[in-house]
Image (cartoon, rainbow, N blue to C red; front, side, top):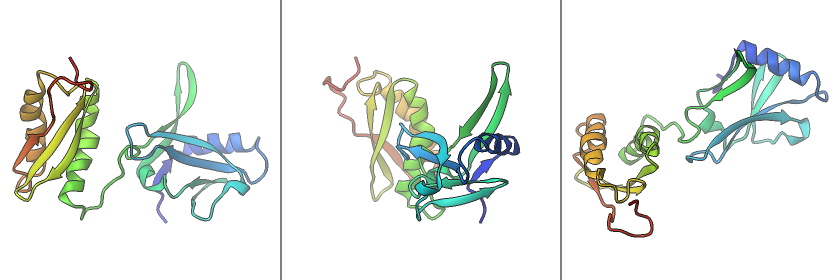
Length: 195
């Protein structure tokens, strides 16, 4: 079985060193809290024999195993744990590019593929302005209906953001499948609008 998670040799050596000080048969658990959301957080903890579940996936490394629970597993695809040494000391890093949005299948629907691009490429940029975009639907004639939220709701630049940025990117990415991107947001002043 190929590992969905990469633990570098330096990180493996570090885990082996840490595990030597733990009770016998202690391994590690890699997990994602709030997987598939913007609040996803990855972590590593000690894993005792008693805490291993039958639904866990085991990845064997030299001297220890890493266990991942069933829910976290798809969100840890292409994850990498490394040991970085800097001026301030040594620390473990865990990078999981799919923690906030699981990798989609190659035969995924247009709706799933557009949603994936919105969550992984567009929303991280809008988040810099405290905004986000939600995909409502894709009509039969290829129109993506979207709603802006947060700092984008009521923003005077939202039309330019949609036409010059988001729509251009989505139409280029899904050429021949999407025909237009329409804003269905109610931008009138309300408790959620940004002014």
